[in-house]
Length: 233
Image (cartoon, rainbow, N blue to C red; front, side, top):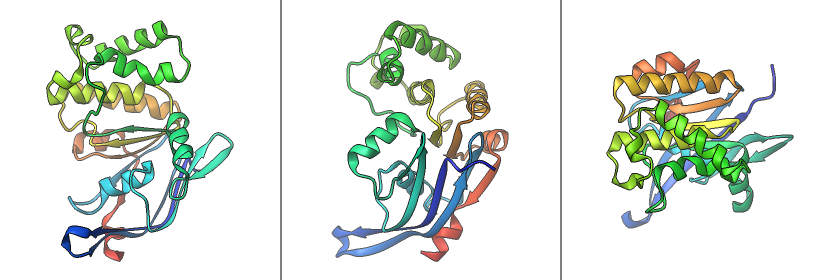
């Protein structure tokens, strides 16, 4: 078997509640798993088990107390748990994508530009990037009349489709997804399932939280039970 795209080993995290007298809230302990190219793995467990926190640790939004989070970036392996901020930013630009539940964008920037921006940053010609953004937004059934408008004015489902398009438009070997279909109807969930399957066939390793059972069963190859890590915390 090839080397893993992602290797999580011995990861532990505790939140310190400074407004509660320094009370400590253990999240996970001894978390460990591997993720390989072309597979989609779900983080499973009830609300509060630490799924979103673990996903944010992999992306580097949360630092860990101990352990390693190794992400392959070309010929190099980067430990997200200990990487310098500049290296972490570079890793996100080359090796690691993220589709969060909520869209956070610069105000007054059109949906089309929001989606095309990762490709333009990768050096793709602007017109080519915009053409690919149009095709992706059309596939996700976002009305063309909205493409020139800032997505801050959109409904939750419309914003989520922009978020998905932005997260999927550029190739990243590792893709993190946090409930990507939470605000979507059945037709658009089916579109997202198709897009995820295409990413898998392209060799992308996907780690996500999929509360929608239909989506999870359609795209996930296995489930990691996060409660096992929470019990040890």
